[in-house]
Image (cartoon, rainbow, N blue to C red; front, side, top):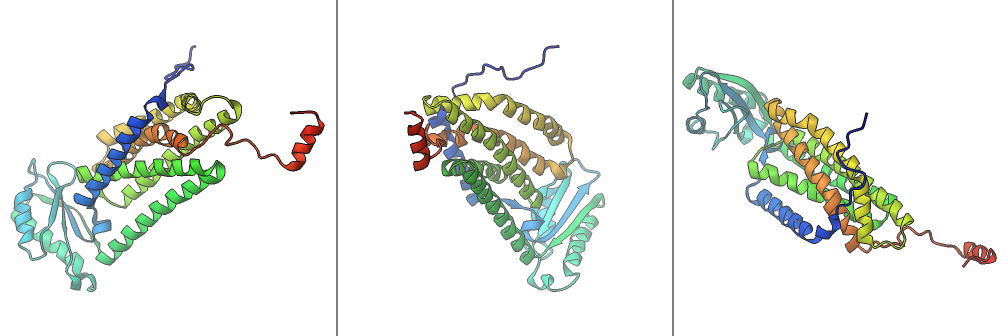
Length: 325
């Protein structure tokens, strides 16, 4: 039985031919992503924003009355609420900031949540409570700080590992590829205002791990070929290395997508953000390994002598004694 091959053995795609336009597009996407984060901001979940979050389902209605809810909850004296659809059209998430005195008063936050639910239930008897969560502003700030530290530490540790295993150019190339992947993921969450919570941090760390794995496979093949083909121009050598690992990259990505796409389309709403982040990460991670991590080696000055072992004086004398040039 002949085995199915998604990528032929003799693949010869000239990836490096388009490295400049693709790199420019990537820089534009990175800038646009951070622009969205700075202007629109991230839709922090209760983990990062703090406050009281109430989740409701209006069982007898096709769509939740968001405008009426905003007016109703806003009249309770807790400031302007943040009300968004949460899952289906008849499900909403209502988030209100807690008064300063509530953070230091045991049970005050829960009572505020109950007050919001009671006010809505009296107006809409079909409102079903799905959740009532509290996070203080201090704890939310600590969560944000720790999340940023975790991401930065993971990216720096990855760059250091690649630097030690290969050379500094490879470390910087891998770090830039990870920065590209994380930036585009944050941009997607800012653009669509998907809820950004602790589970999304876990998704981004998973993207970092996937992108690192794919990048190291490509880099390892580049290192082998640098030792094998001394006279081959570097762009051709990089194309050869990427093509030789292309089958592995495609199969790994496709296998992950087979599991992720059904979960994205038919999975529970609580996992939508997590699944969407990892699904996007599969694409941008594969893209960055080919069009970010590899082309940067050309601009960072990697050449055919990068992995030639340094010859000591004793080795040189021994080579001359053997009559070798």
